[in-house]
Length: 429
View 1 (tube, rainbow, N blue to C red):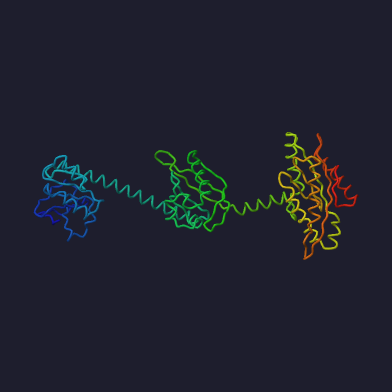
View 2 (view 1 turned 90 degrees about the horizontal axis):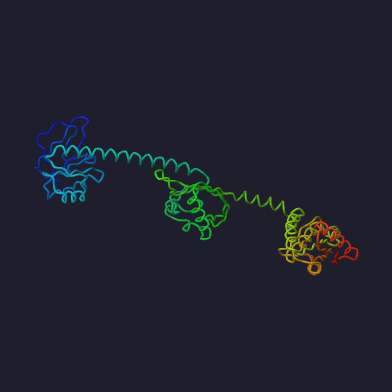
């Protein structure tokens, strides 16, 4: 590309739009409308080439395409290029010039067409500048938002409509043990075990189909391999123009400690602190549900009242710790012998209640006898000693029209008969 021969030129007018001019040596420049200054471009001498946003490219028809390529390479694609021919070329040539990089094609002899082309170029540049300004503002807002969420302790993430991660905060990076550039472009199947990924994917798709907000608890596996309980708070995002759902944003609140506390409170409300058997209150709650179901379906129920023989002597001779060990030993046996749907509970002290599902009196007696023999033949190991343990059991079936509490009273009376007859035995009501 050669410097243009411009001849005598007026001093550029203040406030005029600078227009670059690329041509071959010896070619006269076109006359521009008022408000525009023409600046011949010499790539070897010009120090402000990058400042031109509009460039006229003038040459013979056979040279225009190659000259356009040189100009685009020199000034970059952000510049508006106007191909300038001596005469307006035909449609096929115009199309070829547009393909080569021209944004417009004019005749150097048509001042009106030149003025229109320059005005179009100015408007296109203004639109591009506005778009660039909006992009810079958006990028700045995005950076501010990213900085804000990066300082939040809860993991936060964004997904598109296809469930692909598009962003996250530092807490999510720590949770997943991946940098943000590795998270972006991934799906849940890339960052979570398949069994959990299926749960997450189904929940995401349900939310994006329904719209709105979704809050639910789930178990997640941290990058360390540790499973923890979290509450997901998620909401759909929408395209501002169409209003259609285009993804979702979510946050994760770690509720593991709360879940553990709830479990401890639940256990404390339902279980005996020493033996971990159901407590008396929970026994009657469950028994009431079972009793109602059995009455409706005509299913037999029986109860056992179990008591440790000579328990006071165990405490007095070996200490209360040994007595505690004896009760825990008995619960272990009851747990093995009375699997669901049977239930049992520590009623208080060394006494236990058992509810036997689908058992008439004869079957209940056989089960009670089996438990008694198991206890008799399995001593308690304590402090290096094997200590014999014996129990007495009262058995009663729940009669038609009889309340469970009444059957327990009759079983308790049978327990006293067993005690009176020498202990270590089963008696029925």
